[in-house]
Each structure stands twice: as C-alpha cells, then as structure tokens.
Length: 522
Ligand SMILES: Cc1cc2nc3c(=O)[nH]c(=O)nc-3n(C[C@H](O)[C@H](O)[C@H](O)COP(=O)(O)OP(=O)(O)OC[C@H]3O[C@@H](n4cnc5c(N)ncnc54)[C@H](O)[C@@H]3O)c2cc1C
Image (tube, rainbow, N blue to C red; front, side, top):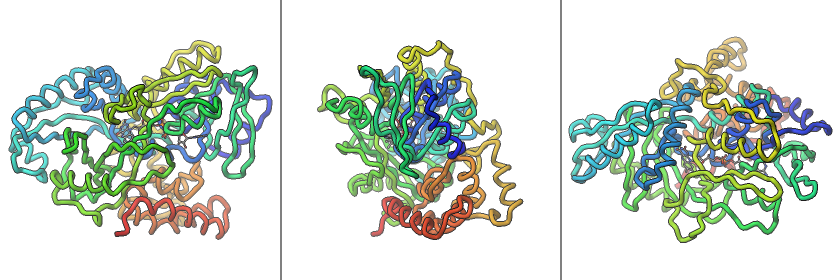
C-alpha cells in the first residue's frame, strides 16, 4: 500500500476500472476484497482514513446476534452465524472465541435463554464455536464473581466471537492489494461523470494536496454508511434520504472492573436494551446505547444520558460501581440503519439486514448490515455489480480467503501484537535492528515504537490520529495515555515522512481536538 505509486496509477487518463468503490469502512473494504479476488480491476477511495467512520467504533463482536433471535429475525441470525464462523476461520489473528454469560434473575430467564441459545448453537451448525450451557447460581457466581447476587437464580453461558474492528479494516485493505486491487485513503469522491445519464466514473479530490482528478469506471458502488445519502444526492439532488443514523456509545474501563475470561451479556436492561461488558485488549468495553440522532457526523459525541445509563447499568454486574473518573475512553458510533417505511418504529426494531439499491444512473448503494456480515454483503453487492457493469461472470472466492497476515497460532484475546499475524516478529525485529525504533511507546498499552514506523511504511497511516486511533487502538483504550504519547508518535512520523516542526505542531493540535471527545474533564 504505497500512496505515491497509487496516485500515479489513478491519474492515468486512459485507464478504466471495472469497479470503483466509495467508502473505506467494513462494507467498502469487503466489496474491494471480493472484487479484487475475482480478478476485477478494483479501486477503493476513502475520504479520510480506513475505518474512520462507524467501522472503528463497534462493540467488537463477531456475533449472530442473540438479540435478533429474540426479535424473530431468524434469517439475519442464520446469515450472521455462518459469517461469524467464516470470519473466525479466515482471520484467526484478528478474531477470537469468547465465552459470554447471561446472568438470570427471574424464574423464566434460565430456561428461556438456555433453550434460545441451544437454537443459536444449532443454527451455527458446523461453524459453531462451542455449545451453550445452563449455569446454576453457584456456577454463575464462579464465572462472574462480580455479578449482583441479590435475586440471582443462575445463568447461561454461550460462545461468540470478538475482534479488533479497525485492525480488521486495515487488514482487508491489504488483502485487496494482495489480489491486485488498489485502495487509497484521504481521497474524497466529489461527483460523478455521466454519459447519457449513466455513471461512467467519479471525480475525486486528494485531501492531502487538494489535487482533483477523474477516474473512469464500468460500475460504481456507494458504500459510505451513514454518508450514503450525500453520495446519492450527488447523483440525484432531489433524492429522499434513505438512512436513519442511530448512535451507540461505549465506555472503556480498566480490566479490574471485569477480571476473568468471561464477557457479560445483559439481554434486557431497564429500558429494554441489550448491554455487553466485554474484555478487550486488557480493558473492558461496556456498551451500547441506541439513540436516534437525526444527523451524521465524523466524530459523534456521547450524550450525558447515554453515559449515565451505561454507568448505572454496568454497576450491577461489575466488581464495583464505575464512575465517570474511571472511564479511560468513551466513543460513539453511528449505525447506518435503513430508514423504514414506517418512521414511527423504534430504532431497536429496525432490521439490521443490509439493503442494496440500484439508481437509474447505475449507481449501486449498499446500506445497513453488520461488521460480522461484511463478507456476504460484499458478495451480494459484487454479484449486482457484475450484472450492471456487464463484467465477466466470476465466482466469489472470499468464503475461504485468508485475510492478510493470516496466522493460525495467534492469540488475539491475550496478545496485543496478534492482529499483525505473520508480521508480528518482523515488527518486533525492526525495533531490535534500528535503535531509534527500539522500545515501547506505552508500557501501559503495550505499544511499540516500531508499530508507528510499520503503520507509515505498510499501512498508509498519514496522521498521528491514524496511528493512535486505528493502527494501534490507543485512543479507544485510554484517551489520556494516547495524548501523552502523541508527541513521540508525531516525531517518529515526521522523521519517516520527511516533515518539519510545523507539521508536528499541526498534527498535535488536530489530534487534541479529536481526542477531547474521548475523555471526561469533570
Ligand atoms: C455502536 C455500534 C456498535 C456496533 N457493534 C457491532 C458489533 O459488535 N458487531 C458487528 O458485527 N457490527 C456492529 N456494528 C455495525 C457495524 O459497525 C457497521 O455495520 C459497519 O461498521 C458499517 O460499515 P460501513 O462501511 O457501512 O460504514 P462506515 O464504517 O461508516 O464507512 C463509510 C466510509 O465512507 C467514507 N466516505 C463517506 N463519504 C465519502 C466520500 N465522499 N468519498 C470517499 N469516502 C467517503 C467515510 O469516511 C467512512 O469511512 C455496530 C455499529 C454501531 C454504530
């Protein structure tokens, strides 16, 4: 993934791409991997950084969605369970198997969830991650010593997956390149070129240099999540809005709030939502909420009510009641939910299934879905692209396609370097070979200096935020610690990229503005 040579390729006037994808989140990157691995000339353009949007802000679950089973969305659960199994097989360096405990407090809870989760196991079939099991009160307390014991009757334990979303996104970008595809971050699509009303390409602006250029394409895919309406309106200015953004907030706490190896799933909070408390990179993520916000933003901000709700609810299940001062990072993401015909529906009732729309101009738009189902969403979308672009029929091969860095013996649950897969030793060796990269940037977060250089050289990281938010997960794990190491990251990057002091100062001031939303000052 080299920026200079990629830009050169883009500016070749006579080149026509088979498929151009707008948006570098889970959906767009999935499409890019699918298209490139079928041998199509594939280009993906992302306006900022890969996974800058919702795709770095998920609850980090690779799951069938026990909740959707409760809502009777059987086909979504079926699809997601199958995809969960494939993701686990194709990216064992990024996805791990995790045990979830549902504590039960009423008479019906135990049998209800035990039966429900047996169905969940059966639906996963051969791709199951292990059987669920009823727990007695004593067993539930043994698994979750921190759980509220008042009225506790027992629990159910089941298996689901967990992953690092932004690292997965970067690895998918690299997988696309491994198969001859081209990806570019910091390149915003600003318009379409058309011939007799049909889209034949896009105009784009390099956000680093402000250079504008056009690229020709047989078919264009809009995979911009909550931004999809903007792209649709570039094509048809009068188009009705298709997306309802719904905000979900997460709090990150120190690991001591949930020691042990189990995650907690609360199927019914006081206001009928689902809440998870999940160990992640030696911390605990608590989430999430579901708040209709009306408009999208690149940096959505957690509302006080959402934070209070999560703190109060989590207090019933964790070692002790967490307070605002315990929160190391708070992050919000926007669900690109497909707007229902019936706009009075509550957001938690809107289906999470994906929808593919085809505009009169030939633009393909994919909206909705989940990280877990990114591969199937991509397969469905590329099938449509083949038809629309008159491309040769070629089989989808992503069901059994290893993700860049694939490594069987990785331990993503316990090893912070596991997401690098087969490149882990090479990165650690860089630190040993060159003194200036040796040692750790943060002992607390287990981040090495060499990871910064690796991110710049191999992962298209261009800003301090790229490194601290998405190549390492410092911002999402501990916002203040990320601010502490930011000056060293900026200096290492400036040295590698040939930038001056002014660049360093600008990067740090930009990073401060973003990071401010990830911690509380009161
Ligand atoms: C709170 C929350 C928790 C979730 N938890 C889970 C979970 O645990 N498991 C799970 O499976 N799913 C989960 N999801 C769902 C999952 O995260 C999303 O479905 C997925 O990330 C959406 O990806 P996307 O690519 O469609 O959108 P995005 O990630 O938002 O990507 C769209 C991209 O398009 C880019 N873009 C926009 N305009 C342009 C332009 N003009 N030119 C170029 N690029 C452009 C944006 O910068 C952005 O990067 C969660 C979602 C939320 C909100």
